Length: 164
Figure (cartoon, rainbow, N blue to C red):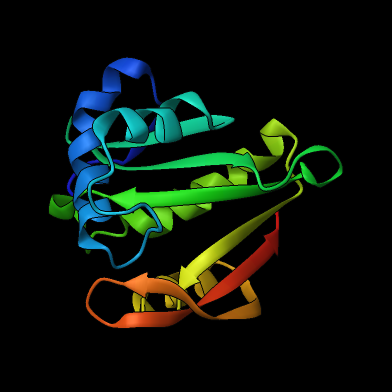
């Protein structure tokens, strides 16, 4: 990284800069369950309107990455957060994904969360699996053929968890 990475809560005005990041990942069909063809309006609702918090990471004055936190379940399961992370293609390979994850681990308790759980980590996404395990997550389950990968067809997905 050339400059310090800073984090702040996303605001609606950020979405025009966030959308190309989300759109690229959704269109790839390789790591997120959102179908290629997800609209900008659907992306806005998912990333800005409905999470407990959405965070952006700023590098050199640009949004380099983002994540959200939301309850994984309602009511008595709402103390476990679900999270989603994305890094801009121009910022990949600079440690942004790790920084996003570590920041979310810090941020989660501020919103009442006691743990983080990822419900659908695509097993063929080895870099993500490695990153999450290196940040303290463990695989607590495998869902056979749960993800319809754009190139590979049906692949397994992991459920990963860690306390914060």
